[in-house]
Length: 254
Picture 1: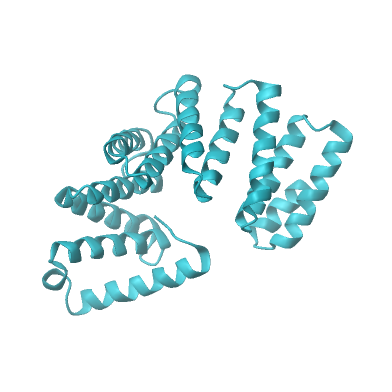
Picture 2: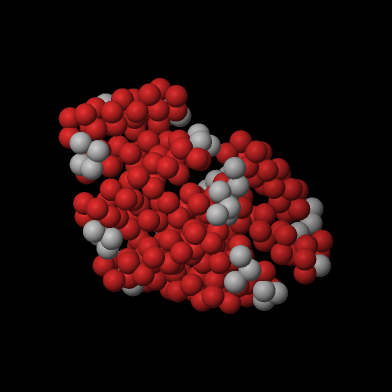
């Protein structure tokens, strides 16, 4: 039942998936109890689906329940507990609850460093997510340091062309642009764009995001008109329009 719900969710059949996730959760609670690992996994799965549907308050309650259960059953430093810390932090970030989200992201990062090591992909994700949150709060210097750390780790562990590495390149460029470090930001935007075009294709939302970011930076520098003209400018405008349509349908990408 749980697996069918996950499959339906992947197919975009969210209402049917929600019904099955709720039924699976009720069954696990009845047969195994509210603190069993299977039950807590079902709690987590339903929370993610509700988050996708925009039902953020109920999703928050379920993420908190999953975290409390894992802390009780597995301990506060267990990798599975830290996943729940990370998940709740991301949801709170979406809701604009930035102070609590920051505390949880720091906890997730410190726990993963301790339990998994500084170069583990999950640790690097936590470093990246904390940096994104700090950038939103205007804590740009610390955000830059974390983005550089995440990028170096991703390059080392995953390779320079991995999508997660290219996301780190893009995110570092964003915070550098915010600080006025436009030359380095431009170089990184170009690296991200070239990599995403090669790995994901020219119409992928991440590629379009890189086109948009580079175009905005060039405009800010006053070089957009002289560097992007004729067919190139038309391609950028078309890409921006495609990205804007995607954002209207699916929400923003970075």
